[in-house]
Length: 141
Image 1 (spheres, rainbow, N blue to C red):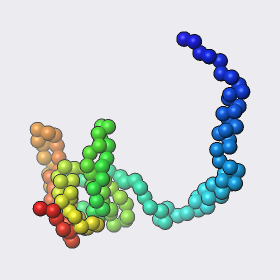
Image 2: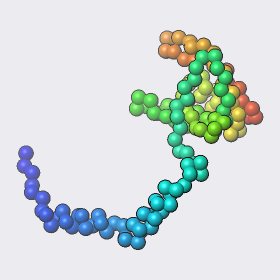
Image 3: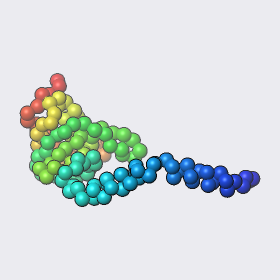
Image 4: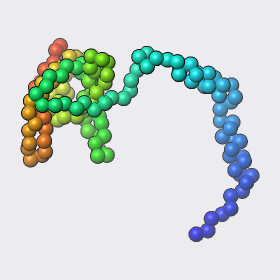
C-alpha cells in the first residue's frame, strides 16, 4: 500500500491552528473556572447519572418517581423508570412490571412504593413479581 509522505509544513500549520482555537484569555478563564469548580461540594451539583436499582424478593422500597427514561441493554434502547431515594440518590429500573405500571402515571413527581414478591420463571425468562403503589397520582386509564 502506498502512503504519501506528509509534508512537515502541513503538520506545523495544523498544530498552530489547533493552538489558536481558543484565545489565550479564554484559556486563562477556563483554567480559573476549573480551579474554582474543584472547590464546589458535590451536594451543590445536579446529578445526571443514575445507578441501576437492584431489588430483592419480599422487600418494600419507597421512592419518588421522577418519570420515564430509557437505558441501553445489549445495544438496544429499552424503556425504564427514574426513581429518587430518601438520600437524593437516583436510580433507574427497567422491569417490565414496574415500567408498565408507572408509565400510566401522569402526575409527576409522585411517591411510589414497590413491594417485591417472588422471582417468577416464565418462558420469556425470570422476573420479580411486585406490587406498585403510588400517591398522589393521576393515572391514565
